[in-house]
Image 1 (tube, rainbow, N blue to C red):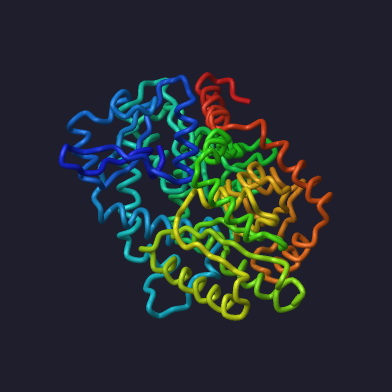
Image 2 (spheres, rainbow, N blue to C red; image 1 turned 45 degrees about the horizontal axis):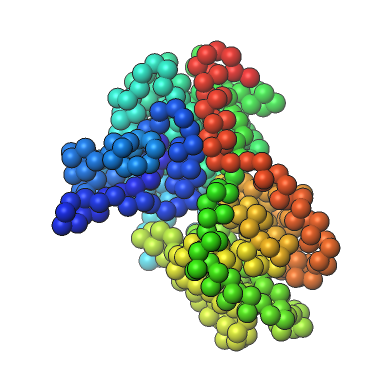
Length: 479
């Protein structure tokens, strides 16, 4: 189960037609599901009338979709989905899990920001309604040995609903998002924090991208009064136990290799090579999400140019920024601040900064292939596959500046320039200067250290490791 399915239907004169959906999590799960030989059925909430019609007409079968696995949308009311996803999910849980409270806008025009989204109870009721519906749909498809795996923060209470229906069902949960320190989650209302913990602990196996996020969950469980064995990664509760594990998600090498055979990819690579002539090319590829810390990245670049005038003729900055959640007021506010900062840099330093404000995956991959320096300075980031993708596809032995608070940091720390406090603009500025002036031999050595551990992983191995541990629990032989 994930919040978005692999396909959705659009209306045409001849009837509903399936369209593939994009997104890093969706692509990762799709690749993994196609590779598994076992019977797989993917469930996801949907508000689409076309999806409902397609269900009635039997268009969601394995053969009809041609995915290699089954998919079932779970119908939801549009109003419930908006409150579940945007209010309780993004404005509440996402901000807490990524420790973004201090980055909230102090704007009287934005009502009920932060924990205030839970004040009247409507957002939480809708969140629970969608989680309950997804759990019920899963229960209806289960036999006793079925392995159920919920994916990401949108479903933190769904394992509890499923457990109430099927007490012995093997249930897993993987958190794609970050899991900030207990102090960040303490800002949530007590009832929300309790629901989050009890829901996640209803899973038999609980997975995180990195040791950092797993340890944060164990500390929160301990502080909340549960019996925790941190070295073993076990939380004991109500006569049961939950195994807390690390499953680092990898980039999809099959997808990456397929991107660069296209004419568009070659055209964009040539564009960036021309832009790079005689200078170093600094790149960032991100969503316009406060967690990605795009604003402070631009502020650090402006500070670099102000403090080191000699670099103004020696660097070009290309940013590929994808719009993200424009219907969420805090995100719209943040995007406007980023645009203002970019405009200021472009006025002060004409030609030094190029920003693309729309989504173009091929263009983004071409930029990753051509960078001399890649900037990833997230405040917190559950996975950050972009950093890993950049290391794999780059052909310049480019330097990577990476926040230590990303899920990819553990895997890439051997070669990346780590930013330990991504809110410290001066630390990021210093890292930019070091990366832009790094000798070629050092860049090559660092790249090899980062690339080696990425070459032996795959999305299917990532998902299979979760299911293997869950099957072991089912058989009573877990490690």
